[in-house]
Every structure is written in C-alpha cells, then in structure tokens.
Length: 255
Image 1: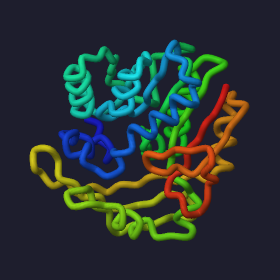
Image 2: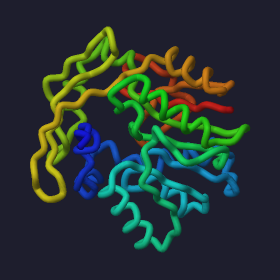
Image 3: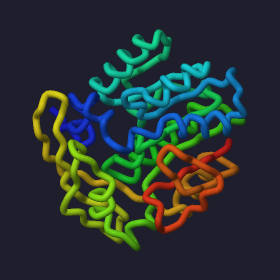
Image 4: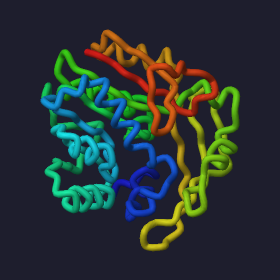
C-alpha cells in the first residue's frame, strides 16, 4: 500500500480546527478581489483547486457564481458540503487530485488560494502537473488567480520566525525549519491537533517559487499575460508590488 504523504495526513480529520487557523480568515476580501478580476460577470464558471472547507467556493456561490471545488481531503470536503447545505447553496464539491483533473476547457476561470495543492507536492514535476491540469481545465480566454509561497522571502527572513509571529493559540506550529537554497524547499516539522484531539507531528516540505520561475512555467502552458503581486491576507490588491517582505505572492494569469 502506498504510504500517505504529509499533506494527506495533515488534512485527515482536520476541518473544524483548520477553520480556526489565522490564514483562513481573509475570505471576504479575497473574494472581493476575485469578483473584481472577473468583472463581476456572474455567467463565468469557476474552478476552485484545493478548495479545502470551501470557504472561497461558498462565498462566491453566495454572490451568484457557478463554482466547482476540488480537494484531496475527505474531511475538508465533508465540512464544505455541510457548510453549503447550511447556507442552502448548490456547490459542486469533488474529491480529486489536482495532478489529474477530469476537466477539459470547461471553466472560464480558476482559483487556487492558500497553497491549494500547489506547492505542497514532493517534486517540481508534480507541482507542474497541477498547473498543467488547471491550464487544461480553463478555456481561452480564461483567467487563473492563485497564491503561492514567495521564494524571495526566505532569502531575507526566517520562515520559522514568521510562522511563529503569525500563529495564534491552538494553531499548527512549525519548527526546525531548514531552507535549501539548491531546491528552494523549506523542510520543517509541523505539529497540529486534529478535530479528534490527536496531536500529529509531520515532516513536511514546501516549495518556494521565485517570480521568474512562475512566469516561465505559466508561459510554457500557454498563458500570455502573467502579473505577480504581493499577497496580503484578506486584502489582495494590484497596488501591492511583490517585495522580499511578502511571504506569499498573488498571481493573475490570462490565457
């Protein structure tokens, strides 16, 4: 039997607690930005990659958009279904691996926020597969809005100190961070308490990307206009130039 990867183990029975993490609290502002980017056109079909507990999917559905959310985690999707039901919304949530999506030219736009799958994969090739599958899923013209880890940040700052400074009581903790300059991967030990009260200690690693890499990867997939900004939690804006102070970058790409 294939051993589960850290990102699969992390999200098992981790939906309620996940929603208490500080980085999940910017939904409204982030959806405002998405709506603006889509010119408030309610006819567009949106794909939400790595939708988690469905916070962006549900908020956009409330605003009248047609949306399909995909995620690998059963417990996160169960929570997303539950929330949609409470709000009396019809959102399509599917358990899917972002490296192997069943869509072809079906969506007008795709979103992938808060490290939705990309860049958690264990190899660069797998991360690229995610971008490739999203590119295949959206029509031309189409728009792809996503956030990812900013490779410029760890060159100037300690990732461990940053995570500590933004964490709150009960949040996941990250320690023994080692940033590898050859691979731009941050290796760390993540400790989290799941919804059943179990403490999980996981060896994790995430890939940080520099803007030129993202631009090149997307160009190779047929995106002709790629813009990159600093990603401010809950306050995405085109006015925020990406700097070494930004932990995440916000990417807006057009096909």
